[in-house]
Image (cartoon, rainbow, N blue to C red; front, side, top):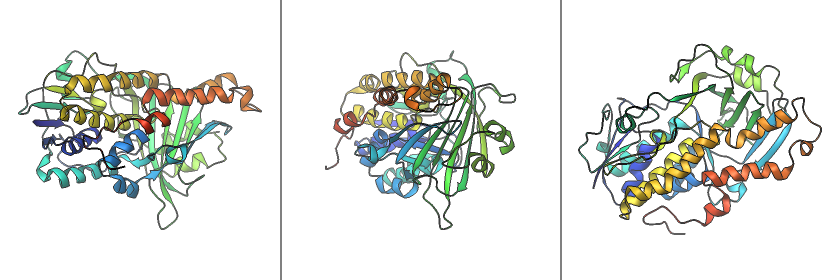
Amino acid sequence: MRVVIAGAGIAGLTAALSLHAAGITDVTVREAVRELHPLGVGINILPHAIRELIELGLGERLASIGVATADLTFLTSRGQRIWSEPRGLDAGYLWPQYSIHRGRLQLMLLEAVRERLGPQAVVLGSPVTGLDHDADLLVGADGIRSGVRQALFPGEGEPLPGGDVLWRGTTYARPFMTGRSMLMVGDSTQKLVIYPIAPPGDDGTQLINWAVQRAARVDGVPRGDWNQPVSVQKVLPHVDGWHCDELDVRALIAGAHQVLEYPLVDRDPLPYWSTPTVTLMGDAAHPMYPTGSNGGTQAVIDARVLAYALANGLGLEFYEEQRRPVTNGVVLANRGDGPEVILRLTHERAPDGFADIEDVMPLAEREEIALRYKKLAGFEPATLNARRSWSVHPPEP
């Protein structure tokens, strides 16, 4: 079986590795850009996807370039603690959660593909246009503006703007809290996420990723345009007055060595992803708001399930049955803030702060919000730990 994959991002490269591990070795990844660089900022990969990457034999490489996330804390913009929970191994998963630089993850996957499938397996400067291809299967893993998706659904148009703007940046700073912590800070109009994406260096600092989401249109953000470098001065006014005992938010953002501006966009769920010789995965299939750390995570799982389906003769029907309902649910849940709805609800109920969070949102409600999203996205600990492997040849226990 010959497979052509459009796109050398996280989805496409993981698909190549997964197909190869499943015994499908005639695989070519075609990428439009002529040279891949470690672009972007931070990304979180949740335990159900880290499981898949470890089963592909990438565990040591991940550990060397990422931070094993230990805990997640939600704070109001006044710095009052709403909810904390352990993450990864500390939460009882059999696999960690990693915070990592997106570009470094992509280049690690690229290196593994070239090692295992050969240097010829990834062809740069070779965009896939339309559905014409010399293969038994074309996999569209070419992102939110996928040419393969456009060929399947020519009337769909541009990605859908959500009305929010995101500023993402990275700053070298001293570790905060455990050095492996994530913070979610916000209210009903804006939020801030902060987490480290590299181990501390010799100078005692580590690369910390942050993202500010503002729930209002900001002039000058073109529809569908993103990755635009901007001055940090554009972001600082939006965090004035925010308080956080765990770290100095304003100083962290002011110290950024790069700031990128993105509009918040996604697409409506599709009625199908596949024809007999074409399918979609990752952002080409289900672009979603960057809520709940599920974009890259779901792309990795797509790749593994596709390889499992093809190697076991189950076809694209099985792949869609397993993946499309889950990812459609995550897309829609993320439009409603996903697990971060806890920030909005707290602010709506106690806009001036609170003396005791139990009076605003009882522990049972906070636990239910967190668990509901984990179940929806497929990473409730007990279920994940017990489910079968997507490896065609499962690793030894």
